[in-house]
Length: 151
Image 1 (tube, one colour):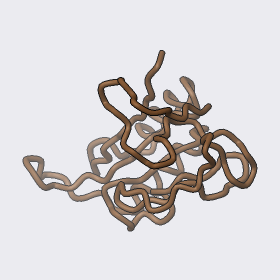
Image 2 (cartoon, rainbow, N blue to C red):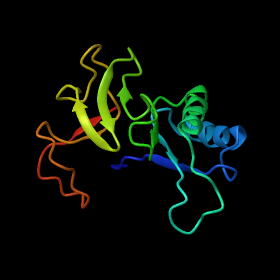
Image 3 (tube, helix red, strand yellow):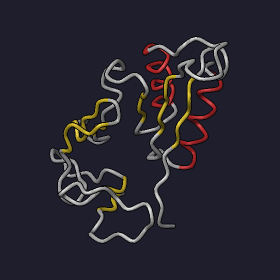
C-alpha cells in the first residue's frame, strides 16, 4: 500500500506490563507480519501520570524476549538511551549480523548495502531506507531521490 508500519508500546509498570498483555500484543503483530518492528519504550513519570514508577531495563528486556518468542523479528527497547543492551540495534534475522547500530534513536552505524541488504549474508532487511547519503525521507511522500524499499 506504499507505507511502512512500526508499532510502539509504552511499557508502564503496573498498568500494561504483564507477560500476558505483552504476549497478546506481540502475537497479534506477528500474525500480521513478523517483520513489523515493535518498539517497547520505557515509561517515565515525567508529566501528569505520576502514580507509576519508571520502567527499568529489565522490564524492556522481558518485553523484547516476549516479542521474539512470539515470532517478531525486529524488537527494540527505547527511552533508556544505551541502558537496554543490544536492543536499540538492528540485526539480520538470517545470520545475526549487526546492520544498524543506534543509541537513543540516533543512528551511529548503517552497515546495510546500497540495496538494503545484510553485508554478511545478503538478506534483504525490511524497511524504507534513505538514500546512501542518508538524507532524511520526506514525510509528504514526494521523494526527490531514490528510496530503498526492502522486504
